[in-house]
Length: 355
Image (cartoon, rainbow, N blue to C red; front, top):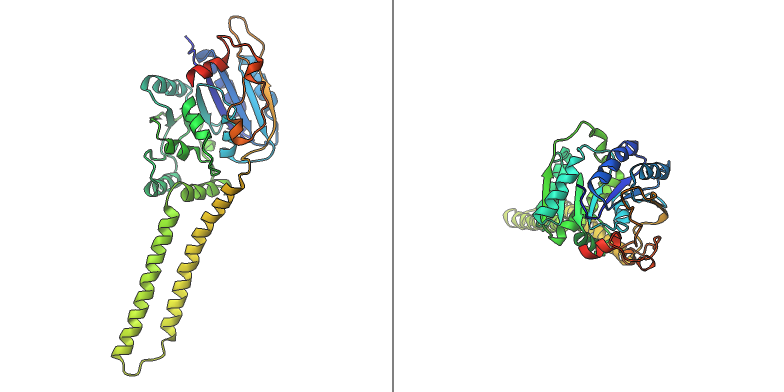
């Protein structure tokens, strides 16, 4: 028997060849397990418009789909925020790539764990990720004050109240994994047996990924201040040692040689430490500038609602109002809730009850 809860599935894509295959699997699964559902697909300015493909599967499996096309490439975090701003479900699944390494029954396990275990966040992964990911998370967890340790996650399910609290945060460095951890809501992590479709699912170590990793280190941990503090102590100790050496040479030797070597080493070491500290502080000043500018995180080119006609025996939920647009400044492209009569089949009524 399908669940009566209204769920949203937010999917990010950018020139993904596996989108067709994933929609062919997800479409019948959503129709079978949830009477009230929506699929929000965020296209990060792909070279080929995936809207016809999404519309095709929406008609085939009676899906309430929304296609959000961004005006330019923004990256995973900004793209996911664009989709989450438009998700209406009481529970929201988050997936950053249509290339998956999990069987779809993992989604049902996550939902059961969230609803029966009283969790606001349920995540899942098949392993701890590659070595570089494990080293990165170990470094972040060591220097951060988050109660929930960060780890590799392939899937996430969040409740409406947790998602609303995360979206209301005004930080411009949007790393959802850390923002959810800051909230402190109850969190559980599941492990699944990986399928054979995995190799392309991992995020490549490109400029976007490395830049995001650096932002995470500076924004969600005290790694930068600790490095600057230890550098200042190290070079301060070096300066004291140089002074002690100069005094000892002056007291022991009757004709000390001019200390140009010691002075050169001391000055060079001191300036090296000073420039390193200034570099770390400069990174923080740059992030303060980003926060002060308050520019929108993303720009939407268009939004296409792919809503199928009513099928016999079931009612397709009408598109509802976008949530949290007042936070992002994104335009409201859906009709207001007041424009529709409130009925028991209206997903907006379900959202109000669940919130």
